[in-house]
Image (cartoon, rainbow, N blue to C red; front, side):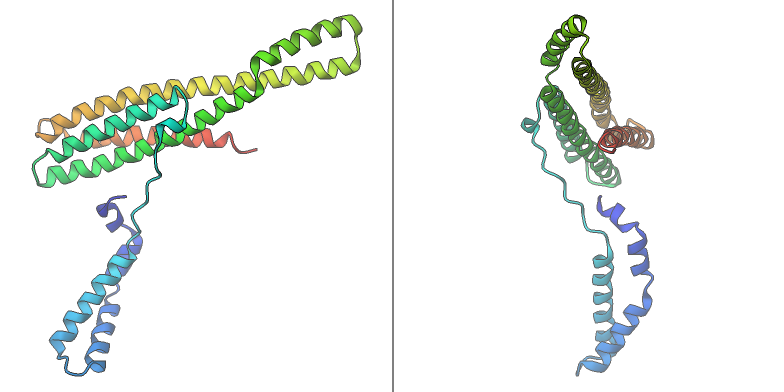
Length: 239
């Protein structure tokens, strides 16, 4: 959340409109501090008022540390690609001449930074899903299934039948997780392509040759898509 986003919040607005605070502080200074005239009281009151407004602003969010090597492939590749794209975008912003356009691009870059954070969260979740699949051991389960199917055909035992159903259920769970992992990887691969495209377009916007509003809209769309993907994955944690 950049300064502009933190400024335009209900909490900040309420503090700005609290003129009674400024008046009260000015009166208190004038009455309680010897030797301070009314001008000094107003200045002191305004200073305190400004401090109260800044204190009311939401704190800048601390970004989680991103370590691509904490996840396996293909998730590591997606995170590294998103990091490279974010770095290129910030380089474009840094090379843009000072002024409103650069400030606008800086705000858009912060939004894409949020997209990088979402990519990192998705990659960790995808890595967790792959870890769960490995623990279930699909190869071992299929081997067990074959063995139990032979035993069931030979003995018709109820115990063997129950074991067979258990293994089939575990295999079905494994296949669902594998399918979710594959679909998530496909979505991230597509968003990576769109991210690279957006970073390339930033160069046009930086020199005034691109539509800034349309560009910001497309960045917002990508970030919203990543947020939606992350939320969908989090739903799998719920019973």
